[in-house]
Length: 253
Image (cartoon, rainbow, N blue to C red):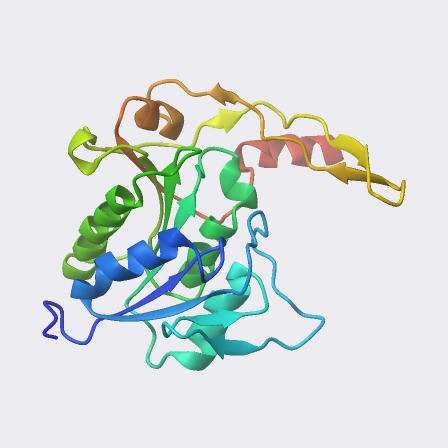
């Protein structure tokens, strides 16, 4: 196969597991862009955030379709691939396609966003792609969006490190109204945990559902997707609350 971009290498990962439909569709649709390597978790690791496995060694295995899978987190997968498997560095890391939204506060917990974040931290342009909808009927739409953005990142590099969080409405590609670059919105606090008992009569707890959107007005990712647009949010990792620096200095006296 001839690639439009010389020796471009793309690393794919996710948090839904190496067997997920979204990963398979992403792999298929990004093939024209270059060489594709897949390193993903062996099982669903949704909500794993940016955790690394430090208390045991990791195992890398290969599925019949050629996808590599790791007994660890999404962050483990990208870290292992970039620092130990792929030489030189991949040209792009794409995480997804996640089954479900990663908007607003979701990005703090998301394993999908975490995989892309690890690529970014290791110096590789990265993006996380999520399909917003419970039924997830249109993975191909999100895959085509990922290919469009991947082509731009490979053909027209931004000249600075970039981490993009992309959310795609679950509609046919022809129904997408366009792209909007926007900020993260915010959810209400999560619903309470759900208390129940297991077959042994022991009390167990399920984490409750995420809160409904609170800050979802124009200019947010929630609003863009609700209007039929693909939301694109550039993320950064400086957690410093700059506006509170002086307040904390004054508080200390």
